[in-house]
Image (cartoon, rainbow, N blue to C red; front, side):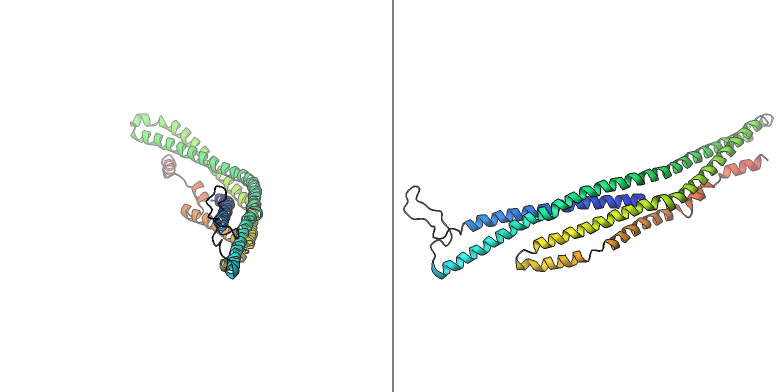
Length: 307
């Protein structure tokens, strides 16, 4: 009910996204390389000015057939210009491939490793704090179980006494007294454990957990900021693409500029707190203290019957 698990889950998903983003952009770079090779292969069919079959039919004298190889004059110049334009496109895709890998993927993977190490450090500290708090919860549960067991045992003796013959009922008094004494001891221990839990809970939520959550918030802020920075590099890389793609690049740049690390972290914190509130609503108001001081109805009746 403290929200730590929600924060851990969210940061874990954030780490996964770093790795998935690197894979995605690496795959994009592969596509650029493949497209570059396809363009090179296609361009080779129209390269080699003046080349064509010589028609001689002699072995070794056949030249590679090229598109437009027999053209000349102004048409030939126009065709050469078209070939040159494709050569520029080939260079653009080759440059984009290299830029995506060197300027985006590699830094992203390096940052992912750093972020993973830092997250482990934060989670280690947080887990130690949470485990210490959950130890109190476990102790309370054990104490509650001992209390209920003792109450039921005393209640069972009381029922046996009621069913016994009158001359044998007196023999139950000492047994019931001992059982009630044990039930009282376990109840005292139960209440003491509850007091310990309530005190530990206050310290946990006020002093122990907030600093660790703050570190996790800062981790999330840095992650968002770094992704934003690398996406800017990504848009810089694709800015060298042909004009028809510039509109898409501009829209992407606008979306990246709108990334608000602070706002995203605030949403992250809000979601974690909302998770805590929903759990508290499911458990009922002041559930920890309420369960600590609930008394078994049979125990109350037993005390009343044996006065």
